[in-house]
Length: 176
Ligand SMILES: [Zn+2]
Image (cartoon, rainbow, N blue to C red):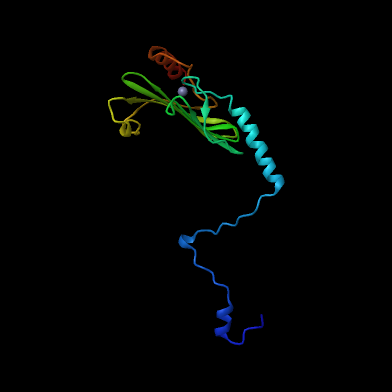
């Protein structure tokens, strides 16, 4: 292409840049190399092998869900509400467990505040089964029974009766 003779021609030959909406940063995609792809696949295979051993903390059933190279989102296959867990680099980033009894449900939540040092915020909430599900788990509708920050993720024994669950919870509340 020859040099533009005038301003009009310059504009005509200029590549057109479309304005980007909402100040979005344009994403540049780079093709992964074969080596990188192989490494990713190996990581996924390794993660799957390790995470396949994990079980639902409520009923002991297997977990299912997507496993990626550096994260995973798993849930109980018997009842998705029982147990939901997110992993980041094979460490628990967030997990939510639900114990359902006749009148009440107990939600046990652990959320990493510092995943490297393994510090978690743990909560136990009592939720009223008389309420519709869409209201039941709202912060202002459920009662906070426990808050504990530390290296421990609070977990109960599997397949507990309500009485056993409450006894175990009393211990956690006493020592937290
Ligand atoms: Zn389960």
